[in-house]
Image 1 (spheres, rainbow, N blue to C red):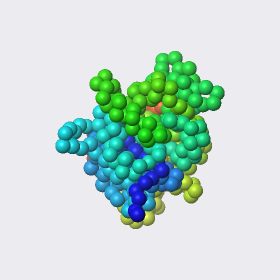
Image 2 (image 1 turned 90 degrees about the vertical axis):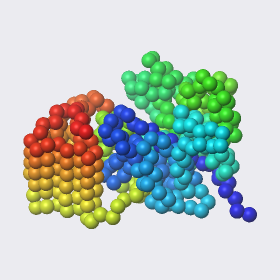
Image 3 (image 1 turned 120 degrees about the vertical axis):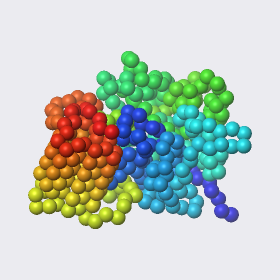
Image 4 (image 1 turned 60 degrees about the horizontal axis):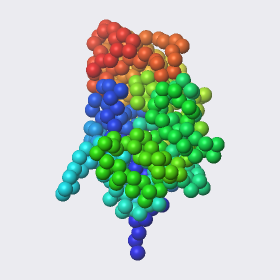
Length: 397
């Protein structure tokens, strides 16, 4: 008899608007934002899942979902076009009795209890769709089983001065969690939650139903589900992750993460054949470097034409950089054009944007504190006029 049963089902929260990315998420959800020349942000958790032998994934969408839905499609680039399992896009929906937008992270999972039940899993992996990292979830699941945990939370050690920006897990010597603090002003530890959880499904199912029945709840994992489990004496453990991880929810952090992939000392390596990051890519011709083109320490994706100078930058597919143009420390998104004589530094240039002749965008910066780079943004489809000067940290829509 054919069985849908899966040991573990992943639920990927991908409905965020990403308001701190401003014009870059005006028309697309944050997980669909271009990254690293040929990827979208969501490629990282999807690739982590299939590399970790998790082949059943629900992707919960909400804000501006069309582009993300189209990109995921049938899941073929990630080997998720399967008869038993695969990838499923799960928007909010109306039932015969009720219907509502996803009100919080916990409510999003609550609304999809029936989907998870179809696979009768022992465990559910909760993921966020807006982080850049490479992680073996299978190892985390083994740790969860070994500890006999009801909920395991992935944590990363952060500098104490940054800890107040995160949800902090305070733990005993055996890594059991005794307290969760949401962005504490005076943190007691540096174990920052990565927003990655493994739950025993039947236990989580019970707490989701109870949480939904509480009219005072924010329907959030960090604010409600985890504190309620701690209060009831459930077994929660922290799982220490030691690799590269970055939340790309701000302009500065998105730019930094792009710069990290061309920095050999950053800790993230996209050339690692043992843990590939898969993506859906359009068929483009090879990139072309003209006689006047000069490239230093940069990634240049297929379909590009480079006649100008590119230094320490990430250049996405279909980009045109004309003769005499200068691009330094930039993330140039797909199909953008940098015209003759334009000067673009420490900037993100959005998809299909045009920087016209002799325009100046951004400026060189030295010695900024991590997370506080003053990055200039040219939004998707925006046009910078000929000879226009766009100052540091300005945004062109």
